[in-house]
Length: 256
Figure 1 (cartoon, rainbow, N blue to C red):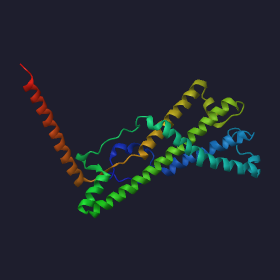
Figure 2 (figure 1 turned 30 degrees about the vertical axis):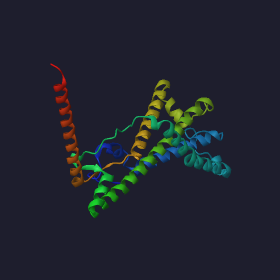
Figure 3 (figure 1 turned 60 degrees about the vertical axis):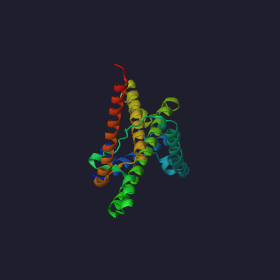
Figure 4 (figure 1 turned 90 degrees about the horizontal axis):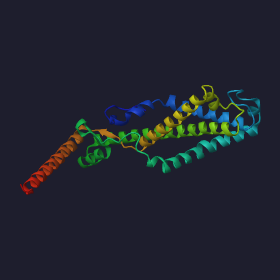
């Protein structure tokens, strides 16, 4: 998806710019998820991991193992991962501060809330800005859907990485699961530092994606923004005059 520079406020475009290559990022994460799941499936079925042997003839020939693996993978990615992410959102994410701070639209630069554009366009029966609002809304929904997909894929990857580390530590210490083996190759303390850094970075990115998935972006509309800017300046002027009047009244009521 491509963003037109003047249709969206630039306050939250940084992360979207990084996530702007779905053919690269989304498919890379999906390949990683499939790889980690196959690695776990091989070890749980009593075979060697991908790092040691790769796809063995047993898992390729035995239709029962293949069918069970496909069913387990489907249940995991379609049910367990989304439900656990929803649980994380309900219990943890809603209590966290915003990863990307919310910024009000800058009327002086021509940006205004999208719903205000629609209200003004309907009042003035302006078809041009009504069409622009619909285009902006469709693009915004596509972006929100995309960042939700990225959040779910990262969460699924995080679950598999944690599963590999936990299972390797408790049940398969004699088997070189992919992630624990890679972490172990750099040394004991360094491996744990890398693992912790990955978990924290993944959680931060997931939280940022969830923030963006519910954010309503500003829309570039100079005519309506100018009107709102005049109202904003008038309100600020009235507040300054009110405070100045209070200050004068306080001084006049204070005995000398």
